[in-house]
Every structure is written in C-alpha cells, then in structure tokens.
Length: 69
Image (tube, rainbow, N blue to C red):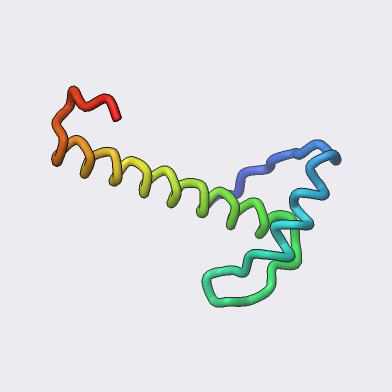
C-alpha cells in the first residue's frame, strides 16, 4: 500500500491534539502521532457517512422517496 503525504496548517494542531486525547486506535491503543490521528479521523468520518447513508436508505424504504421529514 502506498502512503499519501498530506500537509496540514499548524492551526489544526490543536484539533489533532484533541483527537489524540479522546480517540484510540482499533486495538484500543493511545494515538501518539499526527499521522495516526488523521487516519483515525478519516476512518471515523467515513463510518459516519456510511451510517448516515444507511439511515437514509432505511427511511426511504419505510416512508417512500417523496417523504419530506
């Protein structure tokens, strides 16, 4: 698997530090580096998007495609 190099503005350092404090990796280990924090953040965000899409599909199945609530 190839690595992707991403540069993040230093103003986001505080957010990365917060992510490292509150999240753990898949094995339950503390996150200590920014690269792993970004990986976990992306994985969490994609999981959230998938969950939202699933809820939308379930809602449409129950209420139909023209439902407005």
